Length: 172
Image (cartoon, rainbow, N blue to C red):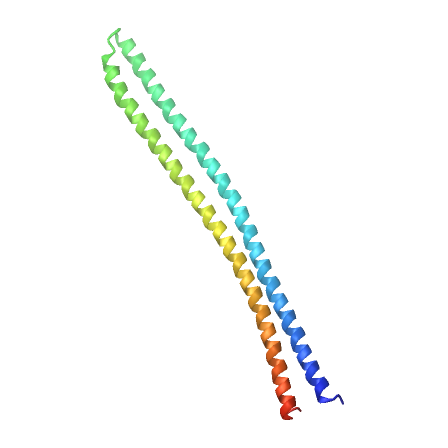
């Protein structure tokens, strides 16, 4: 049979090895989880950047379509006036052009504003995602530190408990 001191040392060593191994696994799991979350965020942010570019393109297409519709309406009105026999007197178009131009400017401004609002929402989401990734990384670090601190304190507690038991003769 082994002497009591050897058993206490072995008990402390087993506790230390188990605690450190468990802390290592907890740390690795937390870091792996954070790395995976950051990978997901990176992919999502790339998709959001693509959505932002697509929104810019769609906004330009809508703006161009609205301007083209305005030009067609003006050309149609000019053709109608010309075919009506009014001749050189196009004062009607001059009044209508002012209103049409103002409506076009408002429409284009509204389209641009909506595009900027959409792009800002996407940019805000990217910022939130980056902050979430930083939080996941920090949380993994804290989990890792906590696991190792727990392992060290458990080993110290076991060592002190075993030393006390040895000193007081309560072994066995």
